[in-house]
Image: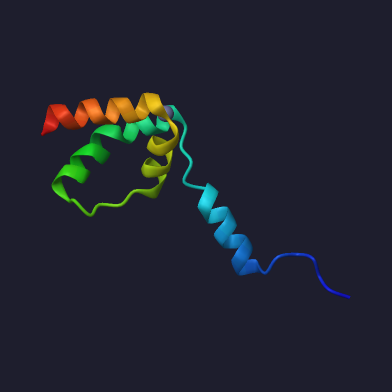
Length: 71
Ligand SMILES: [Zn+2]
């Protein structure tokens, strides 16, 4: 009999892929710091923010406005 349960590491990776999701409130709380860090460190990575901004037009617009302001 084969066990249909995915391997634990596969499951962990699947969970990891969706876990960086933030609410808009969380995103706004971190937006200043995120944009500042992105400008200071071009290779700065924040998967949670990147994921949210990629899927949320309102926050992406806010981030772009903030970036214009800080640049
Ligand atoms: Zn948002």
